[in-house]
Amino acid sequence: MPPDLTISEVQNLAMQEFNNPQTVSIVFGGGAGGGKSFLLGLLTAIAAKQYPRTRWGLARKELKSLKQTTLATLIGKVHPVLGITENDYKLNLQDSTIEYSNGSEILLLDLTAKPSDPEMESLGSLELTGAFVDEVGEVNKKAYDVLSSRVNRWLNKEYGITGKVVGSCNPSPGFVRQDYYDKYEQLGSGRIQRWPNGHVWVDGERKTAYSVYIRSTVLDNPFIDDNYIENLRRMPPQEKKRLLDGDWNYLDEDDSLFSMKLIDKMTVYERPEVLHNDDGEVVDEFGKLKKFNKYIGVDPSDSGKDSTVVTLVDEGIITDQFEVKSPVGKDDAIGFFIASKLIAFAEKNGFTKHLARNITIEGNGIGASLRDALRVMGWNVQVYMATLQTRNDGFYEFMVNADEGKIKILYDVIEAGNLLRQLTAHRYDLDTGKPRITKKKELRQLLGRSPDHADSAMIANMASNKMKPKNISSYIRW
Image (tube, rainbow, N blue to C red):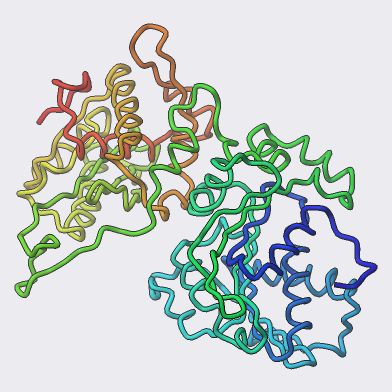
């Protein structure tokens, strides 16, 4: 690093950890304006210049965002302070590469999880010295894990350097919180925390490897424009907590029904594994025929005004949610339209008419027409009648089941945003001895829409965990 280059105290900590041969992964961040992108660019450029012919990955969830932000910072801010001129490198936007005059390369990588490549095999052939991920909280865990497996593959032994993955982030739900922030918090928080993560060979000795979380907010950045800080202070309360304060519990209030910690506890990253025998039948790990364990919860549109939301629970995991936009017309016609969409989705996921009892719909309003349409078509589904009390009990029990580990949410559903926003908007009190949940009318005003995704998930949980009157006052007609 040039001797006249001035960086912040936390950026210097990150630099030290990057140069520590026993550190294998680093996450740096916690708020906006802390110098995260500049740090990643600085580390990337210094490493590429220091070690000729090495190969480094610079990644973000979307390549377009990477080029517009991270790459712009690297070329526009980092290169000048390091004395790197246009004659010292070649930028090939078509191939998404930067090649320095010493033969080192930076590969610009897209970490979007595509349906056509669920195992991220597009990253599988990479051979990297190390990797850097901007806004790692936006990235799918599978992509992060595959990228992590591709470091230590290019001239590491020759130079005696430990390949590592360095990520920057703002607070968000997902694996970064689980794998980094929660451990950092358990160890006492502060500016930096390190914890063991396997082993690494250093100078011929097998030593303990470490992962590191370094907390940085805009207030740790002495070079930031004061007006940028004032901009953050004017933001809405939740975004202010997240981006100014670096608060990972930014969605929480004292009376939150679904806290960020609970959402974190509910989050999983893999769909349930499906095993088949030679006859194509679904079996368990011991080869025995497996009982069908999928459930659907449906929150029908309110007289056709909102969308109908369908939630699938597979092996105790909310794996899918989709919306059905209702046409304009009479309730009967709308009911048959939604019914046809629901049946197509159910059959795609292995449901038959015989298994229709694993589907529960709300029977109020347009739900009555949907129920009738389904039964005319031979699908005798269960019906849940929503009242103030049944909704209170249903959501409170949903929270209890989540805390007990009986219901999980696939990260893809969390990432979509609707369910996360709606669940974390729910508040509760027990002043009367019974749970009282935020009313739908209040949620509509707060969210700007009906909390259909949350209601659909609650109904699906109700069906999945067989909530009957004996253990909850919600009334389901089984």
